[in-house]
Length: 383
Image (cartoon, rainbow, N blue to C red):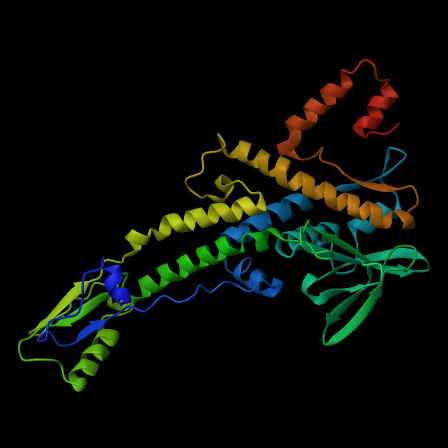
């Protein structure tokens, strides 16, 4: 059976003649792909903490979404002085409202789940606290729904029940998962294969730089006197590793003794085109998060005419639906504690969406069949 090197060289035999002796090679057999484990801590480390594309996608979405204020309304009128807006502005002693919401949006992108815990005193919601998704586990009741959540931190597990009043103890926000009844599917998990490819290409390029950015090759001994002795073979191998590998030895000339010849193998970074592979993987990661690649500086994407159009697409297709989803979940959760008051996302102050908002105002304002009161209610300006 032909060996791996024979197959790589197109079936040509690479067995040296009887007089050629040893062949010192820098090649290894291919193993199984090493994929990142599908746990949140592993994906967070390989993605958000070590991959610039994932990190930027999460930051763009979370920071943009946190800019959108969530306003309280009662009977169509915006409430400024009310316990609910005050709670959202200062949810707990350690975080501002925008900081808490930014964490919620980021967890949805990286874990597919985000959790908020309500601190209740004297029958009123006094604070909101964010909980890490990897520390939370649903306690499923007989009806198949979560009747409580077990939160583990500092070696202790606390049970947060869902039958508390005036609101359930935990708000669990999750993205759609086709195969799980209780936990969501994160864009980061959907992009896992592309993430591993992007990271592997970066590690490969780093290894090439550490090894003088040269492809692997073979040092062939073809002297007529026979083979190298074991001592000569080990000495040659040691000299190659110490004197010619590493960035400090890049470009250093190699002096070969009689009978030695350097044969570069045909496998090279150019043949495998790692740069383009990285760009393809980066575009797939951006696709999973719903971020136009143009905003990330990834070449080869000409879908949008300019950065402004790409930014509008990010807001329209990704951030706006996400913010509205979170606002609906928060409103549904907190409404029993603030009877008749709901939460709504206010996009009027977002510059990117100013054209959309102006078009909406013009469309509603020009509807002659609506009364002024109905127009104000549709525009959310109250009475």
